[in-house]
Length: 503
Image (cartoon, rainbow, N blue to C red; front, side, top):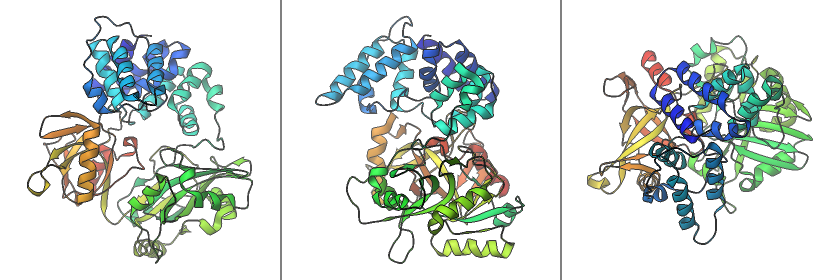
């Protein structure tokens, strides 16, 4: 298949707001692929570089001026090989050699293909929100159940591999995916609830737990072999030796645990979130020790527990890691729930999470089996652009343009701006970082690839004709950036509108 076919479908998907139309177009292309093309084309359609990052920055891409080809000749396999070639370049002079390899690739591409490839290498297509639509398209193309595809994707963590299995082997091939020690699975997520009492009323039996101001971790142990992963499935084992040793000391042969970790101060209160995240990238021993708090057990001593109800998984968790279980209670009365909520806040945490005791582990979805409650309104939004500041902020990128995720796979939908809450340190960081990620600069506004997630505190939302989503943030201020989250995990435009109804 030619790259031009992929580009045409990608453009068709971007041009429609209909989820059904997106799914139909994607499924139609998937059916036409040859088996060796499936993984690469799936990655391209999802806006991902096949095989992951290739070490190409926007500064390199912006410097390339290549005359486009007049006719499409590039095949999907050609693009895959060219990306592998760029990724393999390293050592002295690698920047120049990458630029030369990219020039060769772009010289074989038409104008539309060039724009697609530049946005692909620059991360501008990698919004992640298209994953849900891609799952449905794979199911339609392979004529299998969507739930089978979703589960295989949960267990593999790789959409291209899931598509290959579905299109080559159908349901039996998808059923071959299972929890594999040392291969992280996509985490289950909680959806926001407005109030504790109304959220409690949604469940007949539930677990109520602290919602920590920490970072999500998933740990795998097989004998003495331990691996630790972030919520984005990035391995951080070598940076968190204290967690490795703790898990290695548990009384079991094998285990997979889901939880959070955070650094504590001398009084036992959580340190700033940024200090916890700094440990994930540390290249040397740091003073701050991480403390784990586990809230789920997905595997224990040879038995997978994903499909068991939460109550059974919690029993396994208490058995293997009871001393490190997150604080919580089972099926509390309203006064008990309120007391735990206040206790969590007094300890410096964000709030509580309510979980259905009858629910299996359904990774990668924000359903209503898990509900989170915080005392303040916050949203995780995608940074779309920033404006150059003036006065004391002259020379700094300050006023942020913020977007909510489109659940139907389109680009983020702008819902407001803010320059409040930005410390001098954050201003300096984002000025440098945004210029590195810039896709367009008109001298006043610097547009960036839609991949950075920022947590915003706000008083609420209001109807507005100024922004395409029909709503606008009220009194928004920056709390922090969320390097542990991808754009696919940002709050949706539906969640933003839901705050309007709640207000």
